[in-house]
Image 1 (tube, rainbow, N blue to C red):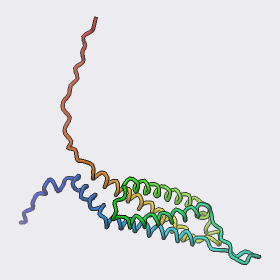
Image 2: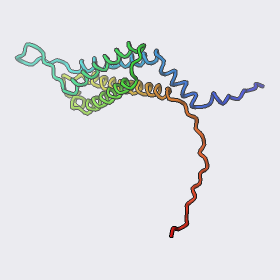
Image 3: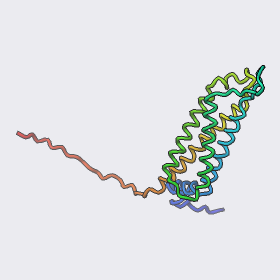
Image 4: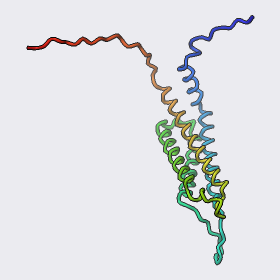
Length: 190
């Protein structure tokens, strides 16, 4: 018969496990990996967006024309900026860059990517992509999917930075409240 040892209290405490996971999550290799992943996904979204429209040769024109929309142009520009930002932040992990400015940038990029992905999913190009000959539906869907994945990755890096900021706060022990009773003065002043 095997004798099982009881689990020590310090190993089962959730705050200690949370601190361990937060400390592991904010190591430089982990942050570099998340930033590199953000950059790669943003580049993939940008490439998918750029290849979404096929150039059409119209009668009487010597060069093919490329139709596009403002939402697609804004999405290409934003994913390009996101890829550059993540690439620069991946290189600058060794330097101490302000966490709050990183969190603000990550939140802004996540919100803008999410909004543009939702605009693209509601656009006429996606709804009628099977009817038109110049829109590649598979590229359109993959671009939106990559933008949503990039949104999640920027939210993840924001969460990791938030965990790192809360890890630096001093730990204050919680003490039970004292039994305080309030006595009302019921005597009337005449």
